[in-house]
Length: 219
Image (cartoon, rainbow, N blue to C red; front, side, top):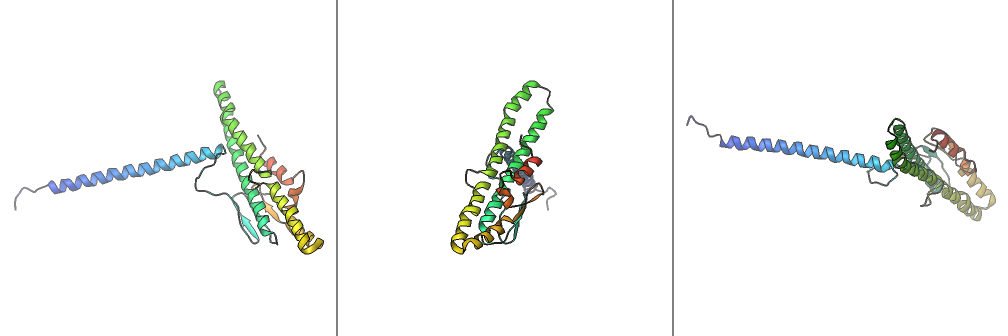
């Protein structure tokens, strides 16, 4: 055997290992950067009230006796299960959107309060903060009257007008009143931790809205 070993094969293998290592580092860095960019985009889109496909869903949906979500929960079991579910799941979804918008506005306002440069204060106040306030106001209005008819007013009209008349036609006055009594006593818990009845939403001076804006005063 020659005392001189041919190292060409080993050198090729070593280069291949080095190249693989470099490629792995680049791939890992790319995935990490893409994830951070997507996260940042979603946070900005959420704070200004813009729609984005970030792979999350905040709708509270369910059937049977109860349902829960990150916003709150509700309970009802009756003939108009679907319509009560729609009312309360939409209500809690809109509530969460308002709370998120409120928190984004407060965060920006708190930041502006720390600034000492008058030009920067004016720039942010008339720019980003104004946009956030508009998004918050829009989110609050959607709780009551949403453009897609998912607001509280539309849900209550479905239950206490359309469904009431249906019960009245099919079962008479007594049946209609019994059905509506069941709907009115259905309860739900908002993100403030307070529990309300569906019937209380009918009041002109809604206890629910007062409680929500007491916890999260409109800017």
